[in-house]
Image (cartoon, rainbow, N blue to C red; front, side):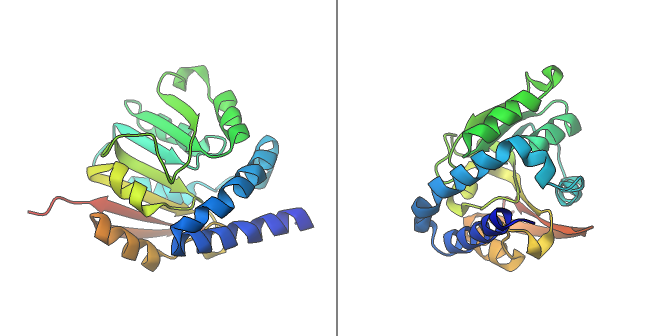
Length: 210
């Protein structure tokens, strides 16, 4: 690992810890992180490990219902979005990323047979351009969570899946107890965690109280 990559990983962890504690600090980290991931976009395949989505898949296996509207936040080059579309052929999948070059790569790598159900757009996860309750499932793979927006866009009975490809050693990582503390006041009442290979995942679901 070279010096630039080491610095990038450390900066991502610093940004994650700061923004989870104080979301208002996102304004300081937004542009540097976008720039960092724009630079990584052309060589992203060399950065990620082949099993980087294994924790996410473990969480998806536990879903009770097939989602029809899925959001992949921090989609990067779209690997998770494409996996979701293949897994659920009737689902409409939207991938959002802050880095324009990542979104360009995601579009380029999406095969024609998925293009009518998978779309990508540049956007800020702190201010999503979607209506309340727009998605049955929101996926965050190695992504900083913005809890207020998650609580807003996940539909009743919907779920959010948080996956970290290298567990607690992932540069962008949030401990599960912190995720639960932030999500419970926003209507998420059921949680399940998973460990597979190097990674870990948490599935949080909104349940209508009987």
